[in-house]
Image (cartoon, rainbow, N blue to C red; front, side, top):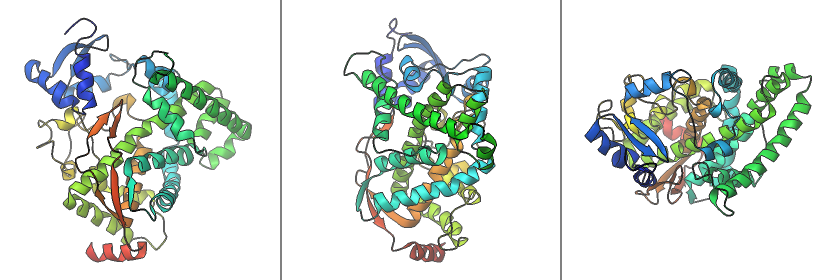
Length: 414
């Protein structure tokens, strides 16, 4: 168990900051004790488990033998009324409301909106540039897509900065010392809450007595949540806290996109294979015609390129040569509870379909309009508290002559 209270907390944090939690912390103890071992982490007695059977046990027994919990700082900043803190019926109710916006009809409505956001972003942030910070650019775009396409809330210039201040304190010590990360994060959280309460109340006034019309128009998630509030299914606090949580969950999408482009730059054959897939999609489109939900379903190799880490994803028991970048490994059937980029069981990420569309559509427009190279091929990944690229992943971009020329080139080389 290590030292009382402290245990191996320092070793845990050190490995986490180096982005080597599995190699430097978990794997050495597995070598000694096997796939289950005990310690103290952050003041709590802790059991660490590894492998598909462990994943299945934990994820399938949520609300039965297992109850999820989060650090105090996370709860205070994400909100005690968010879905991550709810159990049983309340969790089921909130999940149903969120999921209603991500059914077939909702996804079909989202695709053209996301296409428009991506094209506008590339036209205003990439066009005319020879170098950009991919990580920063992706973060701005993902934030905009979640707010404007999914929630239907207009993005103001200062909003992203406020959310970033909250994120900095999510996994820190919940100590209210003036000037500390958590103190700054709490102040930013109050700003966000005040802004969202105003938006929610204005939306309620618009919808009062007119819920059917909103539903017929395929309303945004905010419309779904506010409709639930009007009907007495959820509270205003639950609406606000779940909007906050969904925005922060988009951080993982940002990191996944950045790593996808890094690995494609380092593996030209994978880039070429992916490009052929998008050439096939472009061949079926008229000039200026938008992507559809069916088009995204054809991006099978693109989805295999998704880069993830940790645990079973690094385990040679399930994946031959797991540390190599080999998207084709996912063409074969993967055993249950082995590949879990969005979690599993009742706690599977409610917005994973939005994240998937965000990634696929962004990749499509970038690979068909630009080539790129890495300025720092060996750029390290830092955890503080979540993963990010140490230099912001600066890339040099080379625009293709035009979309029509790109179409001809891709079709010729498909």
